[in-house]
Length: 189
View 1 (cartoon, rainbow, N blue to C red):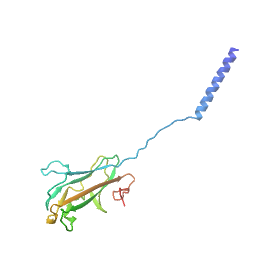
View 2 (cartoon, rainbow, N blue to C red):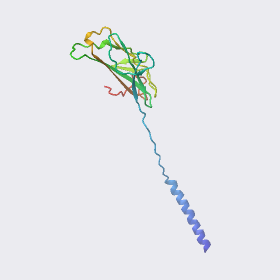
View 3 (tube, helix red, strand yellow):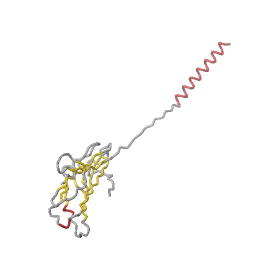
View 4 (cartoon, helix red, strand yellow):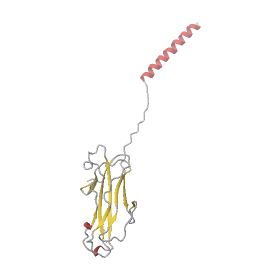
């Protein structure tokens, strides 16, 4: 009798193992978590100046007592601080605020820049950097000096010249074969 009970128990255990294995075979479950992060496009506008005494560039600071015919050192570059290559463009706006009480028609052409057209091209009010800017790299300078014409007359005495530089970037990946074909610029019209 003990043998029959043992054989029946053994058969029951074998059947339950086969049933469990079959159930496990048809109901396997697992979870995988995948994180996909979009690349970032970040830039930093850099403005430098060569001191009058010479030497290495230092961060640009406002200049006082500019005279007609002077050239003021102002080096404008863009650094890619993101993790993806970027197309870069810069806009440069000039403004002359005449001294209090002085009236007249301001001539903005009296202020000029030495644009680096070897690496930059002007189109639609922007200067576009010819090549894609790799992460961690810095563009060649857009310009390195602001030149004040010798023909500035006394109307400009004690006036203030304001140079506003704005840099923008957009992704390179799947965004045209050149900077002029790229889309997705900030504030694009």
